[in-house]
Amino acid sequence: MRRATGRRHGPRPNQPQLTERTLTVTIERIVPGGYGIGHTEGLTALVPLTAVGDTVRMSIDRMRGDTVFGSVLELLEPGLARVDPLCPHFGLCGGCDFQHIAYEAQVAAKTGIITDALRRIGGIALDSVEVVPSPKEWAYRIRAEWISDPAAPLLGYRKRGSREPFDVLTCPILDPKMESTRGRLRHAVHAGDANADGEIHAATGDQAVSVAPRIDGFSSGLVTLTINGERFGFDATCFFQSNASILSALTDHVVSDMTQGRERVNGEAVDLYCGVGLFAIHLARRFAHVTGVESHAKTGSYAHENAKAAGLGNVSISGLPVEQWLRRKGTQLEQPEAVLLDPPRTGAEPVVIEGIVRLEPKRIVYVSCDPATLARDLKLLLAAGYRLATVRGFDMFPQTHHVEVVATLDRDAA
Image (cartoon, rainbow, N blue to C red):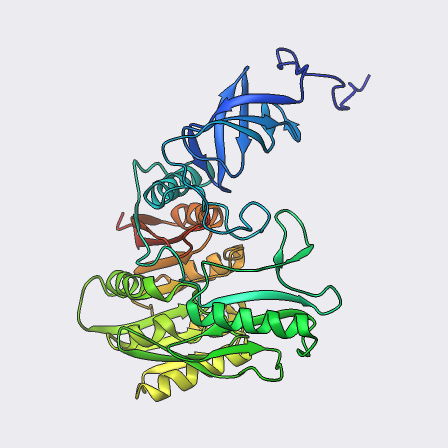
C-alpha cells in the first residue's frame, strides 16, 4: 500500500506552542533583509526596524517552523546603537529602514549582513568583511523615483510593505539639488500646475537635475557627473549609481582589482552590464582594449558618447543582452585578462555565469547590490574552478540595510 504523503496537520513534535500573539525579545544582531534577530521561548524572532540591544514587545504576524516574523508594538529598552530617526516619515516610508541606528552601527550591521549571506547561501565562511563607510550619511542620493497623483494630491514614495503611495514632506537622504526639485514639483502637483501622473524618475549630476517623463517647468535630458576626473553623461531614464560621494573609492577599488594593481595591462577587459561606462572608461585608461555590454539602448548610447568624449578609441560598446553577447560574440575573443559584471539586484542568470566561465578570464570582479544573489552566483563560480580572492563592501545606501559588495575571483591554478 502506498504510504500517505500529505502534510502533517497540527504542530510538529516539540514545536513551541504560543498562547499569546505577542513576545518580548532582545535583539542580538541584524541579518539580511535588515531584520533584527533575537531568541525567546524557544523561538527565533525576526523584527524589522530594531537595533542591536533593543528589548521590544513584538506582534506575531506569521510563523514558519520555529521562526516568528512580526513588528514592534513597544520599545521596552533601547539598545546602545539606537538613535532618533531624522525623517518624520520613518517607519511609514518603504525606503529607509536604518535611520534609527547610529551610523557606525549601520556599517557594522552591513558587515554581518554580507558575511551571513555568504555563509548561509554560498557556503563561504569569512570571519569579517570590510565595509567602506559613505563620506555622506545624509543628502547623498542622486537618483530617485517618485509617485505623483494629482487627484489626491500627492508626490511621494510607497508605504512600507505596500504599493500605496503617500505624500512626502521631506526626504533627508536626497542630494540637496534633488530635494529642492522634489519640493518644487510637489508644490506644483498640489497646485494643479504639473502635468505629472504616475512614476517620475529623477537624477542629478554636478549641476542640473533631470526628470522623466517631461514635465512643464522642469529640466529633462542630459546631466553630467565627474568621477575621478572622468565625465559621465546620463539622464533620469538610465541606471547610474545612487551615491556619488562613494563612487571615487568604489571605482578605484574595482580598477585596482581588475588590473591587479598594474598601471598598464596588455590585454582585454570585458565589462558586462556596463551602464553608461562608469567602470569601462576608467578601465580603458589601463587596458589595451575594453568591451562594454549594455542592452538598454539609451544607456548604451551614453556609454558610447562618454567614451568618445573622453578621447578613448579602445572602448567598444555592444547593445546585445549579456547572455546573447556571451553566446554570439564572447567566443570570438581571445582569453580576456579580466571580466567585470555589475548585474541588477536579481543577480546574473545561470546562463550568464556559464558564459563567463567559457571565456576563461584570469580574473572576475563582481559588483553586487544584493549580498544574497551575489552569494548564490559566487557558489557557481567557485564550483567552476575559481577561488575567492577578496570581498569588500561599500556603503552605497546609508540609512538602509542595502550595501554594495565587490567580490574578486581568480582562476584556481590547480
